[in-house]
Length: 291
Image 1 (spheres, rainbow, N blue to C red):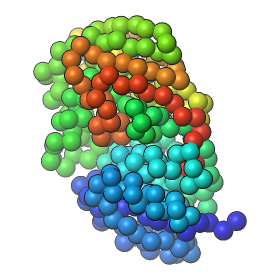
Image 2 (image 1 turned 180 degrees about the vertical axis):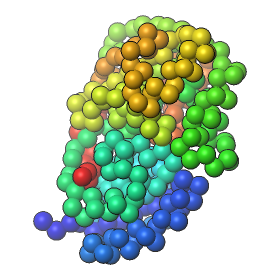
Image 3 (image 1 turned 90 degrees about the vertical axis):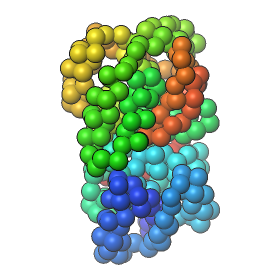
Image 4 (image 1 turned 90 degrees about the horizontal axis):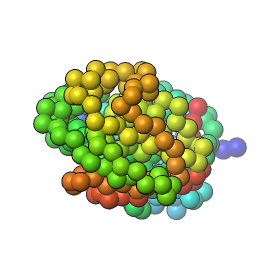
């Protein structure tokens, strides 16, 4: 079956200009594979959504080349349609590409655009906004605020740096959480609602999260000394943190939560909703090219 033509939706500033620098090699790789494509550069998520709508209307594969926020924005326009998402990692974290097994090299990822298969995956809906990875709020909100404001070129290490800075001034929040209609409360760091289970440049918060099981994975991080929280942090990159007594892992189709002070929930590196927020899974609603 002939592959649909591609519309590359590229954020040139992603990864501190990494995407723009890699684009010529990607274009050459696509030509070498005989793929028909056009390139559209975008500088905002709103513009990216417009471009995704145009690709959908034209019958093209909408290929997002940038960070996870860009991929999530394009996915939001394709979910529930016959459109297909392609992924070329070009940002700092590249967590969705990592979860799909695509890797971090956009030139090599052109093989997936040429010969990959379509897979139907779940997406998460946070008050009407779509995300693919993990939405979290609380301490994670403070970390993301710092990471987004940092101009030091730290690459994937940006989230470790931001965590260390945020921890110094952190005070615990009191949380109200409703899991598929069942209410509970706790005091602690954060609530995270995972679709892919990966965020923060390779942090496997929910190592066994499935992209097509029709469920969300919820992680409650309870109060503990900052030193213990920090000691657990490196384990998240290996997924060995899951035995910690400070973490509660739950599964749900719908999660609602808020805290005793304001927080923005972040997903895929961008603010997605102010609390309170309700998050629902939308099962197998997005088609994506995978190896």
